[in-house]
Length: 170
Image (cartoon, rainbow, N blue to C red; front, side, top):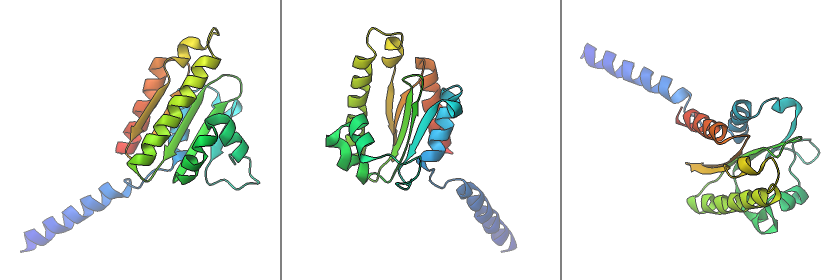
C-alpha cells in the first residue's frame, strides 16, 4: 500500500511539473520569439500591435490600420479573434503576425485573410529586390494559432515557424 501511495504521489508531482509550462501562450509571447529569431535589429526598426492594447496606447491597432492592412471584409474576423500580435518593420517589408482564434472556421478565415495579404505583398514588391523573399511568405496554423511570416529568406521563415511550433508543443 505504501508503494502505491508513493507511486501515486510521484505521478501527481510529475503531472504538476509537466502542466506548469503547458499554459497557453499569448500571441505577444509568440511574436516576440518569432521576431527575435527572424528579424535582425527589430527593436529599433519596427512597430508592434497587440489586440489588448488600449486605444490611447502605442500598440493599439486602429480600425483604419486594420482596413489598410487586411481589408474591410476581414474586420469582423479580426474582431472575433481571441488575441493577436503583429510586427511591421519600418525599413523593410518584413512582417510577422500571430493570431489566436477559438474555432477552426475562424482559422480558415484568418488563413484566407493572410493569403490575400501575401498576394498584396507579392504584387507590391514585384520588380524590387524584395520580390524573391516575398515568394517565400509562410502562412500556417497550429491549433488555435495562425501565423504570417515574412522575413528575408525562406530558411529564416521556416526557422521562425519551427521555433513557434517548438514553443507551442512546449
